[in-house]
Amino acid sequence: MLKLLLWLILFVLCWPLAIAALILYPFVWLILLPFRLLGVGLQLSFDLVKTLFKLPFRLVGIK
Image (cartoon, one colour):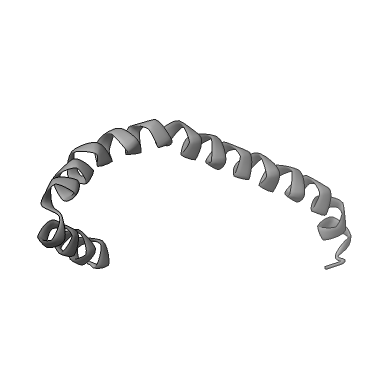
């Protein structure tokens, strides 16, 4: 809701910039999508390594 309100304010103050932002947003999202996927993959791999290191302690019962 806040993004919509900010966009409407931008549209009132400077409509060409608001229209350009509206048109360019999907392209920027597509460009940034591989970086998000890479971030998710790295996060999952770090969680796996962390879990593997903690596994012996959990099996013994040490928290």
